[in-house]
Amino acid sequence: MSTRDSTTAAPDADPTDPQDRRFDGPWLAALAAAVVGWTLLYALDWAFLTPSTPVGAAVAFAHGYLLAPLATATLLLDSLSLAERRVADLGLFKWIYALAALPAPPVAAVYYLHREWLRPDDATLLGGP
Image (cartoon, rainbow, N blue to C red; front, side, top):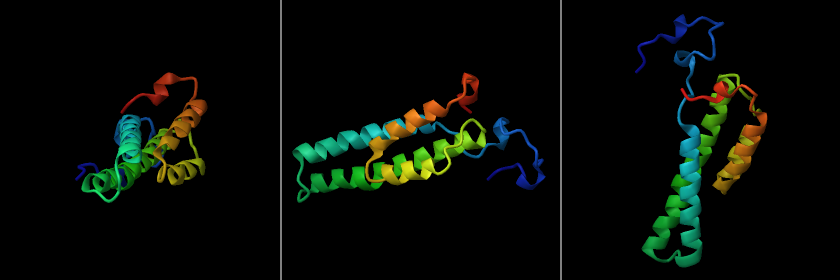
């Protein structure tokens, strides 16, 4: 529960103020961890496991129903954080990347390249919270 009342915030509040940001977080680190985990589990599942075994089912569940949605959510949260800080707005592309990342999280690499391409010259804008 927040102690700050959102109705008292000024309408022209500075978006770079950390107290006014809702989407701050270590989204790139979480996205990278989810994509690497998904890739390793998917490769393990594809190369060595069969779906009819309990281990195969557990690994398929982990990469399909846990890590893929996690990667999608962190991708969306990172793009929302960039837009909230007025660093870069991916617009419709964030939803395209999210839909593509749901079945195949390594699409996040393309998202990251797009994100870096849109990055302004001022490196302090992409700093952490």
